[in-house]
Image: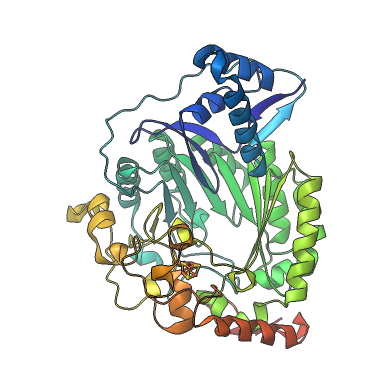
Length: 476
Ligand code: SF4
Ligand code: FES
């Protein structure tokens, strides 16, 4: 007999805005319909699948047995594919803790964001050449203070957010991080700490866990220490190995995140071994996406098609082997996808991103788009996050599909991929309204094809020069 339960990295939360349940996990949240919510509530490791079906048949009636059985199987398969369910051979005590009740009635009005990406600082001791921070970094003096970020968290929760990623730069560079985590936790938000683990003492990680961190994502640059430290331009790999151990010793769910590129794609087997040794719940092998610093370094970072194919095959092998233990996720670069990604799940639709200086954005790279006047959140101004989210011209610029040009405007996929990534369209074509060149239907697709062909012809990574974030070019 096997007893399914929701994986420790995920949490069921009551959505006080729309009334239902949301299963929140590090990457995002799943809004559950009524039946799925009834199943999910019973995934606490105390019941077998047949027992769950019997309980639901008692609730909905014998006539619904077939539909319920299929719904339960379908939900479990969907959760398993995201690494959101674990199985044990012995039952646990039922978890009767009530979910927090809705505190206020839904206000309606769509879209509402589910996730706040709080980029609390751009400061970071590392200088990775693919950093997703903008090329123009916000200085320490320009950062929103603790009171500002605390007010932002409150207003984000009021707007509909159920999850916050504390990220940077390196969020540990802020001394008030514990206070911000405690504030988010107190508001009922799922707290994901996205960190390089540098600098961090075990006592501080304990304090962050006590403050309410739900999940920790630690970046690792490579499995080989020399290579990892060269990529980060900082001797940090040994420290990161300690942090990985501490996270699990403290009972926190762990994602190991590795940004893949030309110089480390050959390491997939070793990176999986590292994640296994760390008992990671999730290993995210996310290839570089070519914006900001990564675009500056594209010639050195973009891999060949053969490298991508070989790495993807190894990742698929390990994903199958580790199913139920470590969720191995391999994300291709857009340059090698057959269709564009729905970047950020659509512009200013599900994610609200706030830069260290309080600038409210739809994504980390949007500040670089010319002609879009984004606004800073500043509690002293009286202008609320809701007003900025709903009214700011930059946030509204690419919402929905009214802005689209052909071929997106008449394409049946436009409601799924939202025309791809606006920042990539701008970075490659100079016009953010154009179809993402990652789309084979884009008139600009040849730009990516040419870049891929150049990568296929490029020399081995040994001779590459990287422009490290915030520094002059450094030979590796
Ligand atoms: Fe998506 Fe636009 Fe390409 Fe259609 S044409 S698949 S909407 S990016
Ligand atoms: Fe800005 Fe894709 S990163 S829309």
